[in-house]
Figure 1 (cartoon, rainbow, N blue to C red):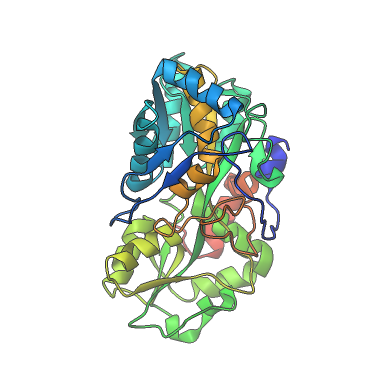
Figure 2 (cartoon, rainbow, N blue to C red; figure 1 turned 90 degrees about the vertical axis):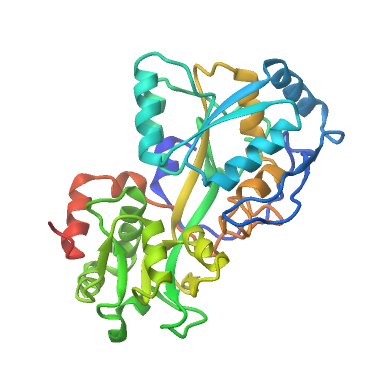
Length: 364
């Protein structure tokens, strides 16, 4: 699948392919030993005795280098789990955790200057990857063992989607009595006028644009203008929106990632995130890639394959993070049946973004 095809987006059905380890046969046996607040789990236990010869070879070469630098926008708990898992394999993960915009700026600046600091990048804004590919900053990954068994819709010659954070409607359960939502039209109920929080498209990144682009594509311009009439209060980040919702500052927050909602729920807040059951759903997608000038190329290959293994998927996508495994790895939250891939190229077009801002009444 080409970069343009991967970024175009299409309706997905549930996939039941099994995660089959690093090289497609047998993967790391990793057991998470109890959840902890704030994401992630206790330190995993790793047993490499079941690795096949290909995977053993990858591991041996990675251990010779001993270190791998990971640039990521993942939540801290997930990063901790990756570090803990590879530490038991005598590979030190050096994480650089930034939000997607900061990560993109840093990696782009370093690469343009000819610096080689990152080995693997895992970012929740895949829209930047075709440009990085064109500039020669990424290595092809289609020869990696785990890549061949990955769903075609979620891989490209230069990267793979390794986790998905669905975007839904977060509710304050003290204010809204709902156990499920049939459709996004729930947002237009008169009772919610003035009681909705929404991300300000003037101040946030691409995920919110991708969400509203999906809504517009499926419901038309009139839906957006009707939502504007609901007089949503605008905020500048998903975490802040979930916190305000938890404090009783609104009845609904949209779009809200499952991760932001469950973080509040796990703290005992009256917050629940609902995904419409009879409507398309989209989300933030995490892409993993290997840098073309990786200082530790063997360790980079091992980490990339680990992220796509069954147990790597369980580290990335758990009930604690609420993110979905792209190939529906057993033990991970399932990808919503009506999941729709974001239209990255379209939603990043300035003309489309300005039109979304206008229709939603968010003009400055």
